[in-house]
Length: 125
Image (cartoon, rainbow, N blue to C red; front, side, top):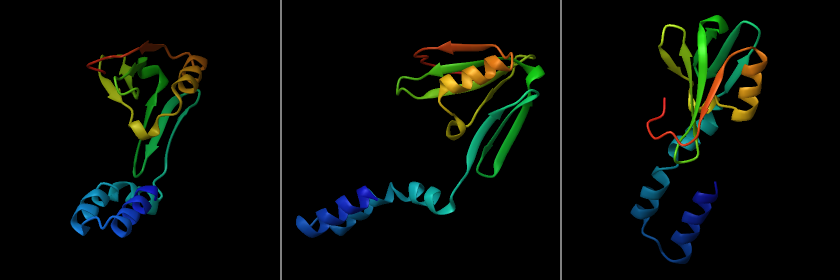
């Protein structure tokens, strides 16, 4: 909303060209769509599984199939979280489902799931 107000102010105050304003506002359309569609996302850990939902997509992994959960910090300070399965496959969790990593790590440790934290991984999981 703030970006729209700034661009509208720039159009009125400094006579910003409409096509430049439209180009700037074009980048805000995905955020507006997320706000209008009220997309829900969450993650939970219980005694038997790790479950998540991101919009219309959801998934669950039995805890017995998880060898470890890797938590990699990227250079942009975001996290990439992946479940490494017993058979070696890696399953990345959707970024919008990620809670604060300390809370997720505590919940996984409470469920006896091994976690591995890697600060500043260039290649990630």
